[in-house]
View 1: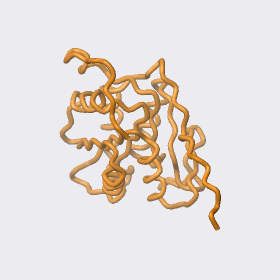
View 2: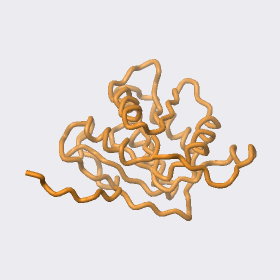
View 3: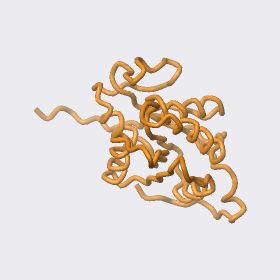
Length: 187
C-alpha cells in the first residue's frame, strides 16, 4: 500500500499528538489490553482480531473489548490478521525480556511490507512515535507487545507512550474489518 502524505506539516505540528481513527490489538494481557483500554478511555474506536474462543493467558478476553474472533485458537493467526488489517504496527517491547509473539509481529509486518516501529520500554521518546505516525499517517494502527507474564512493566509503558503520542481523530470513521472481495470456491 503506498503511503501518501496529505498537506504539509511544520516541525511545530510534529510535536502535537497524532489523531488516530482506529486502534486495533489482539486482546492479550499486557500491551494489547493496555492499548485497548487506552483507546476506550480516550474515545478512540477500537477493534482487532483475537483467537477463537477469545483465548488469552488469563482465560477469556472480556466482551467489553470489541474484538472479532479468528477461525483458530492460535495466537499466530490473530497476530497475522491484525498486522494485515492495519496500516501500520507500533510494537512496544521490553528489550530485556524476549517475546516470541513480539518477534512474530515484527516478522509479519516485514513480510507484508507494512510500516512498523519498535519502541523499547526502557528507552523511549514519545516524540519519535509522533514523528513516525505523522510520516506513515495510518488511520488504523495495530499496537502489539509482550503479554503480562512476559513483561509486567510493558502495559504501563504502553499506556504512557500512547497517552503522550495519540489522541482521537474526530473526523474520520473507519469500517473494520476491511471488506474482502468474495472469492468463489474453485473446487
